[in-house]
Image 1 (cartoon, protein in one colour):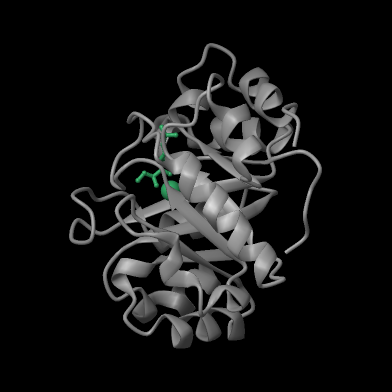
Image 2 (spheres, helix red, strand yellow):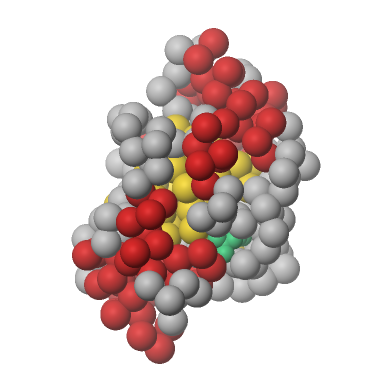
Length: 222
Ligand code: DX5
Ligand code: ZN
């Protein structure tokens, strides 16, 4: 995927105000954010349930940026077509929920979407060695998936560096996205480790001025 000079910023709509969803979507539209990060949870792969394709399709009517959909669900392959129809531009599935990852990635791409793979904190990046050239984006979970507002796991820096080296070694054009516990205090260090895209939920939506917080993240040096 195309590399950018500034980090890609993906506000996580999980932390948006669902009573004012349209307002929050417009805020992201107007901001310097690049993507909408959309977290789908099934209460089985992760201990929480969020929203699914119908909410995403509804949001798509107002949202004007790339839809970066993160599936935290078992048997994600059952729903690829539904998420394509709902408006997903990037569809990311978990390594831990995908026994036939190679086939799943091809299926996502055949539906016209970019294909991403997410890794839980305990999963080493080395498991992607033989498939890295087939992946458009690797999402490194820097918290345990399921909830916004958790604390960043420090080991993530090492994983991002290792993944960056693997991508270089294989001449791949895979983007690295870091998801969970990203703050204004640690974002620069995450970018320095090699991240291309940062997800930010709590940091953006709990700040007094979400647009300005997005601007600050976007302004970091890559
Ligand atoms: C967690 C989700 C994240 C979450 C991030 O399972 O994948 O996208 O919304 O939220 P913050 O940025 O608050 O950690
Ligand atoms: Zn996410």
